[in-house]
Amino acid sequence: MKEVNASAPREFILLGFSDRPWLELPLFVVFFISYMVTIFGNLTIILVSRLDPKLQTPMYFFLTNLSLLDLCYTTSTVPQMLVNIRSARKVISYGGCVAQLFMFLALGATECVLLAVMSFDRFVAICRPLHYSVIMHQRLCLQLAAASWVTGFSNSVWLSTVTLQLPLCGPYVVDHFLCEVPALLKLSCVDTTANKAELFFVSVLFHLMPLTLILISYAFIARAVLRIQSAEGRRKAFGTCGSHLIVVSLFYGTAISMYLQSPSPASKDRGKMVSLFYGIIAPMLNPLIYTLRNKEVKEAFKRLVARVLIKE
Image (tube, rainbow, N blue to C red; front, side, top):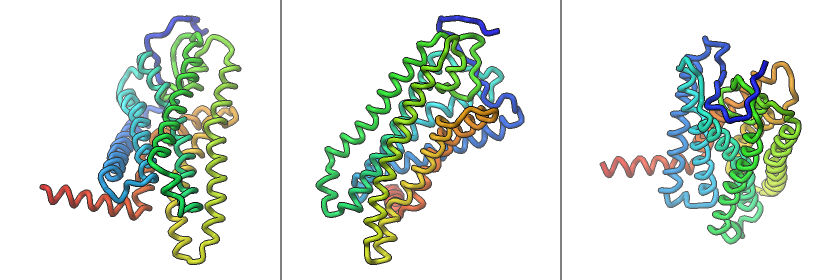
């Protein structure tokens, strides 16, 4: 029997993977290493992009925003997750749950829009190369980045408010390792059909619409690249887009799988695994993808290291 209580609970119990205690130590090690790699990789991209004069371009400005976003994304969930894995009481305060829910929704939606903005930047660079500096001027870049952040946080204000206004039933046990909308809806004492419909609408709006814009951009990019006569020119053009395409595939693939999947007996654990990849693994892989595939970033990193060593 659920205990009906319309007042806000003091804390939630996050089950996570507590039903598989043998997984806790390996998961702690994996999450900790992933978090350290994420911090180092994204901070490196931010520093290199801001300190190297050759990387003062719109592409690296948006990449800096993506790295900052990934830093905030993982920091909003992983530290609490690490604490709970090694604790006997796997709890999170009500305030902590609200903050985690708000940040997870805000940063996820922001990344959806930002990836679409980055694809537009690549479209202009390849399809309108002679007008690139005129179109992608500093003011427009700032406006596009600001629009991404404002849109994402505005979505979170609305969706978080709607979710947190629902009366909850005890015991306050969240069958997840973080406070997410689908997990919190299961604790509600009232019918959540309307909330699920709103969540589906937001998922379509922030996942499928930006993805459609990205696919359209890359359709024009592919057509422009195929018109390039030299093989070297085609290779270079595809090379500038390869990293972004990989990141888009990782992010949207996992996000759509999580929010648009049909209910099934295995969907609970599948949702947890997808959330792990979506919120931890992907932010760790993003800087690796951009640095390993990008000669400019690797060269800029070498120059930065050399400058530091010379000063010492």
